[in-house]
Length: 305
Length: 255
Image (cartoon, rainbow over all chains, first blue to last red; front, side, top):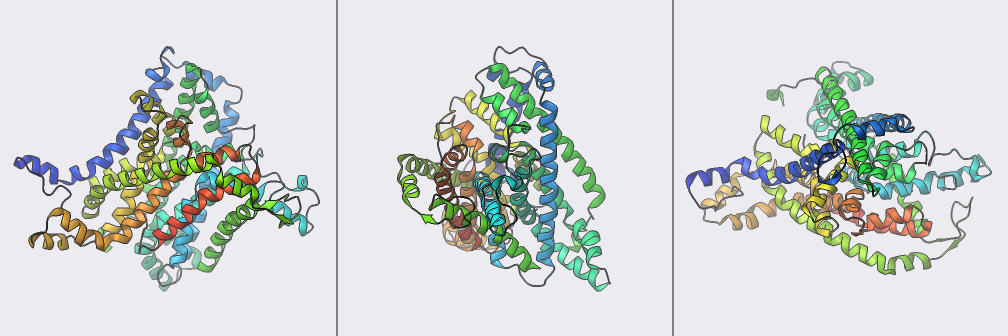
């Protein structure tokens, strides 16, 4: 049955209605138009174009103002550090989970899937709240450290929340996203990599050789888009930096939202200039990952599946 | 080693949920007590019974259920088509669906908010539902496609040949066989909507308060016991729904 069976009308109407294009159209239109409209409006507003920034002069003023701000480079570098560190940790952790899953024969246990799905699904806000409760200087970890005698007072516990290095933010994002990476690489890991890894083992490849030369190249087609998505999320996310970040340095996402929520329309242009710059960095990173992907991934002939 | 993965993940999740659960019923939990000396459910009970929490739960459920139903309706035909085809345009469709995931979340939320303002619907539940569809629909398509690739279309054809109407085919042939996958898709789509903070805040102009928004507000300067209680209000439905979804044979994201 096609989704449009039962449609009446001229032959061409029925043909279009029954084609796969008609089937995917509603979903594509909602997502593509929604995201596309958001993208165009945002890009326009950053140049002073469009209703949301009515009266703001058209041009590059917003970019000039944003870049001239004394904390711009500090925020930019901090955001990059947080995003790169979270992505590297999430990709490494997710790859290891995926690797461990296929290192033993047999189906993946339901409890493992449940745990990974749960990690992916816990809302970011709730996860950040939990991390504050565990990692703050009077949090659970500090109390355990005090009871076993490592510290005497809360201020002796390392500052992990609102710290200058953004460790709390990185930990929060990386721990949630590593489950996402595991989940996205899972189909390739179980359907293609497992057999290839077994074959490599039979041919005498060591543990690390199997991981490096067989497993990672095989899951690369899923791993790289996952890395791109984690990086984009980490660079532009708001919840974790807002709840676990300090006053300085602040991530660009915090800066953008602060501009956006100001009542002055000029600052709204600034907000979109910041988010456009974030977007530009993401585009560069996606291009880089795509380039890396072409070199790393091992093309698997379709017939061999 | 799988045991290592399992224990690491369960320790992390257990620690997070456990600490929040203890914090929610603690009373004067002073440093360095690992377990509070005194317990009280008074603040938690007050938080749960407060009109603000009730209203947020109502709003959150209305929004997320609407998003789930609309997203599944949009995703179903798309997933059926995707499950049957391979090749270039399958890649293009997934690329479009992937677009929201590589936009910076802050930029996406601000852009969507402005778009909704232009449409004149900003600040309503309707606006929040529209905004949530952008991340929710790709998720629904991905999960449904993963289920439907293993469905044999010829059963539908057979039923149709025997005279079943399209609706009868859907109800009596297709759905019963992919039910667990559809339930998983519904549960996970609900969770995607339920988790949104920034999209809800901006599209709702701060007037549409879901439990996640309420939690964020409490976390940025509220009583820690209230915050922990609200965190559990947000997390418990997710726990339940993910457990429901885990009953499905395979909910991997198709690549």
